[in-house]
Image (cartoon, rainbow, N blue to C red; front, side, top):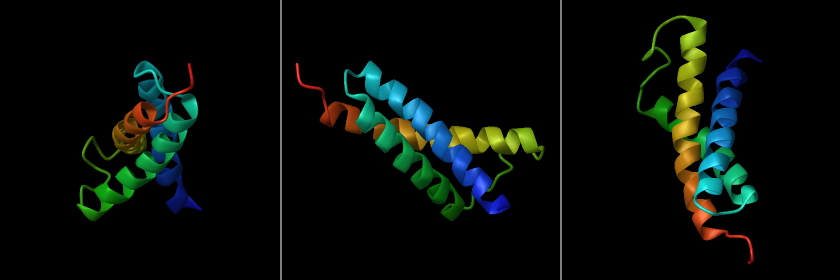
Amino acid sequence: MDQFIPLVISALGGTMIGSMLARLSGGGGTGGVLGGLLGGVAAHYGAAQLALGDTLLGDTALMVHLQNFLEGGVGGGLLGLALGLVVRPKA
């Protein structure tokens, strides 16, 4: 169960930041949430494949969780912004 906690935190960061950026760009909330969720998970796996590790910000548990949240936020923000621009609500 412990191996899923960083993944969930990354998905949470992507969902939060992705939906905010999608709304700021004038897009819908659904595209931002889905893009944020997928982008957050993808950013977490991408960072693991690039061997960035969980210790860029520090070794303590709080800093590892913060790094996972920010990883997901970056990936989710980019994909959420893109989907927010593509999927717009009808006027």
